[in-house]
Structure formats: C-alpha cells, structure tokens
Amino acid sequence: MNENIDVPVVPDDASTLADPADAAAPAGGDCCHPDDPDSSHQHGYITAKDNYMRRLRRIEGQARGLQRMVEEEKYCIDILTQVSAMTKALQSVALELLEDHMAHCVVAAAREGGQAAEDKIQEASEAIARLVRS
Image (tube, rainbow, N blue to C red):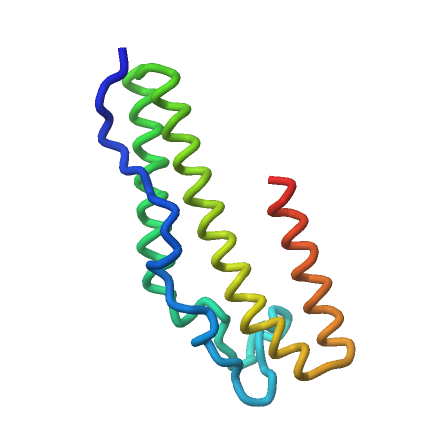
C-alpha cells in the first residue's frame, strides 16, 4: 500500500537560479584558482549562492526523509521514488553549477588564454565526464 510521505520532492526547476550570464568574470581573469588561497576571486555560482543553498537544504531534508522512511520500514517503491527525486535534484544542482562554471570561470580563463585556458577547459571536461558517469 502506498502511503503519503512527507518527504519534499524537489522539482527540476532551474528558473530559481540566477542567469549565469549575469555573473560577469572579474577583471583581470582572476577566477577559480583553487591552488591560490590568497586569490580574491568570486566563483561563477556566487550570484545565485542563496538559491543553491536553499536547494541543497531541501535535498538534505530529502536525505533525512529517506532515512526516516527506512527506519519506519516504508514501502520500498515509495523509498525508491524519493531516491529518484533526490538524485534528480542533485543532478539539477550539478548541471547549474557546471553551467555557471563554464559561463564564468572557463570564459575568464579563455580570455586569459595560454595554459590557464587549456587547464580550465580540461578541468571542465573532466567534471563533465564525472557527471556523465554518475
């Protein structure tokens, strides 16, 4: 028997995030240098940080809901449905982060040119490959 469950399903609604095109690259191309802790840059997602945090908190709530469902021995198909919803929500966040990264960090590195651009493109390609495999 399928019971109503109180785990929120996060819609795949990218409209809640700011337009990545609004996140202009910082002057001088100083963007996303993870090996330089003193670098004063802003990541591409920073303009939509509050929206990302809201979505991630919703996903965190879904994870707690899944734990509760297993603890309460809910019907397995209901649990699987919620796992699917949570997976889709995480994938949606990942794709938005990737889009922001490409529009901000990769574009800034491309403007800079040289090895920095090649490295940033390689890094993005590897991130895409990880997402595709997941």
